[in-house]
Image (cartoon, rainbow, N blue to C red; front, side):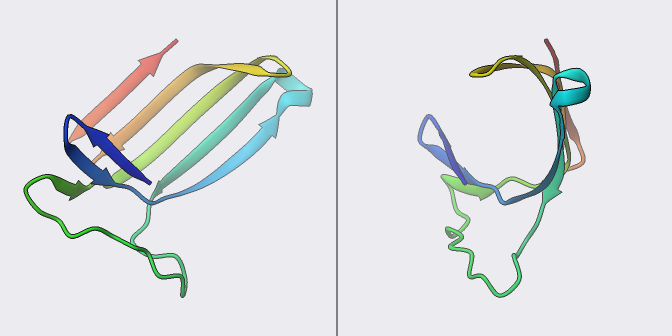
Length: 91
């Protein structure tokens, strides 16, 4: 995954697991973290430089509230990036 904000790009490779709880409570739960490699698969990382760097996500938690067959809203989103910055969004 490659993100670009005003000419600055970032690489990110997440390993995540999901739980489908739509029958019980109309929610999906996704948790994960960054990984450096994926088995024998070659990751095409860009070189780190002035306008490019890598994002390291220490912990990622997301709860989706399913509102219809084609729509969902974010209930809780917590991500710890580089173990120093914490992002929390509660919808």
